[in-house]
Length: 300
Figure 1: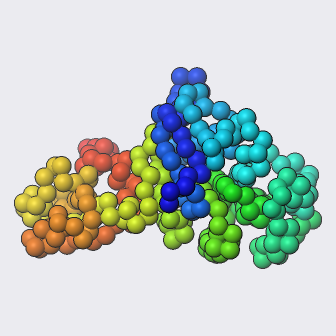
Figure 2: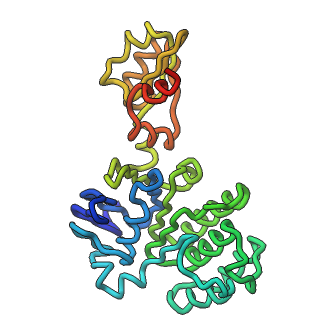
Figure 3: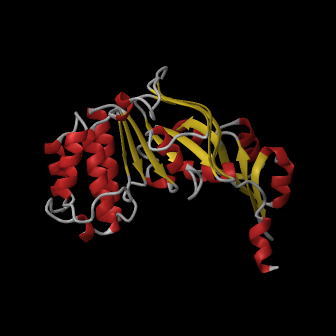
C-alpha cells in the first residue's frame, strides 16, 4: 500500500466562523474501499466536495494523484461523486441521467448500468421527480459504479434504501471492485452497514481527523469487559479504559487494546468476561469517551 490517491496537508475549511474541516493531514491509499465515518455534520460531505474539486479549502493543500482537483481538468475526469441530492433536473428521465454520465466519463459502461436498472426494478423512462428517496439513491449509485472512475465517491449511497437493496448494493460494490480495482470511498454515519466490505476506515469528528486505520486495526483498538465492580477496580485504571459504566450489581468498561492482548488476558484471569466490540462501536468510543454521566443526569 505504498501508493496514494489523495494527500492533504493542513486541510481546513471555514464557513464564516465555523470550521467544517480542521487541519487534516492524511495520505489515503490507492485501490482500497475506504469508509469515511462520522456523525451528521462532522465534515464528511465537505471533505469530498474538496476532493472532487467542487469546493476549495480555506487553508492547507490537497492533491489527487499528485494534482490539484480544483484546477486540473484531468483530475476531474478521474473522479465521480454521487449522492441522492445532486442537482439533477426533476423532469429528466433515468435514461437521460445515464446518457449524461456516459458522455462525461470515458469508462462509463452503459450495458452494465442498464443491467443494474433492471436488477433494481427501475424503469429507464421514469422521471426523477417520480422517484422516492431510496430510488434516487439507487439511481445515483448506478451512475457512480458504472462510471468506473479511478476515484469513486458514494456519499450515503444507501440513504432511504430498504434492507434487501442495501445488501445488494454492497455485493455490487465488492464485485465490481474485484473486477475493476479503484479507490472507492463510502461516506456513512452507520458503519455497521458497510463494515463487511470496507478495508480501511477514516473517522472524523467535528471536522478533525480522529484516525485512519485498516478495518483489522480498528477491531483491535478496544474490547468490552463485564464483571463485578470490585473485579473491574482491581484490573482497570482510569487510563486503561475509555468508557465505564457502574451498576448496582455489575459494571462494564471499554478497555484500550486488543481483546486478545495483555490487559484483556489479565481481566479474564480475574473472572471478568471479555468480548470483542464491533468497528462501529470502536468508532463511537473513540469520540465518546467518559462514564455516561451526561445521560444519567437526565433522570436526576
